[in-house]
Length: 238
Image (tube, rainbow, N blue to C red):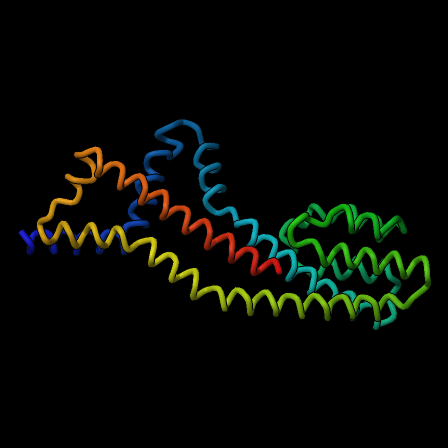
């Protein structure tokens, strides 16, 4: 019995290691256009599966804004006008959503209110740099301050903040991994109990005390993961 259980555990481990590709293949077959007759369903599922997380999207916006400040500083130092420099800098940077920056490009080319356009297109998460750049543009227009120096200072501040976020994320990688391992320990305990022929599943699913223990364990496990994630998010936001 112990050998059979060990063989089953090894089989499950191999399947978990190589399973996602096969699962993805089965999913494609199940919702393929030839099966369902609805091509948009598969495209919707694929778009949802590949959509970046809000944190990753915010990080992409921050990196793009840093590149924008560097490129804009170089263009202004080369002697170009602010509108032309901003237009060329926007074309040189790969933003997550280039279409959202069309009002900024139009304002820079037509001599419109660039500061308001930058503030309006800045996303709620990751748009701090664009809002600071809008404030610099407003100060340069109203007070006549040097735009190149202001943008260079904003870029330096954004790079420092980005480095700090990367350091915090690296320091939190260990606690997050430990929390996930601790959350998976109950499953390992059930597997070990089954290998010792203790029938843990019969107790957990076949009796009222077992169901109560299962519900409380799952609730505590979920609360622990949620609390760890909350502390990590707060640490990164500080």
